[in-house]
Image 1 (cartoon, rainbow, N blue to C red):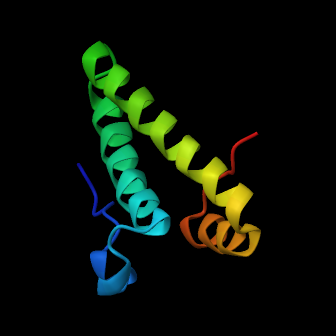
Image 2: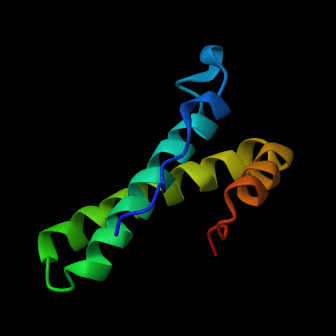
Image 3: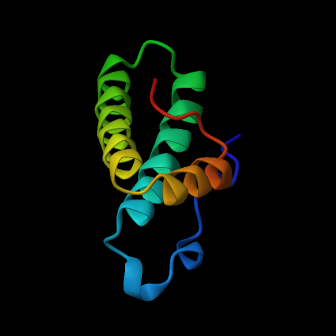
Length: 86
């Protein structure tokens, strides 16, 4: 029942593996996998806690990117189809 939800690493060039964008790509991939897991196992509270920690880290990275370079931020948000921090 788990679909192919991973963000392919080839989306990020090899020179930018540690960049903010690549970190957000991989965190988004983990968020999607955990969300799918929690759809099947609603009462798995340790996974819920892990999901909230990952979402918080991704949110902090997105806020940092928003403050540094808004063009890169808007490109990333539109590419991943996620909402920005409020």
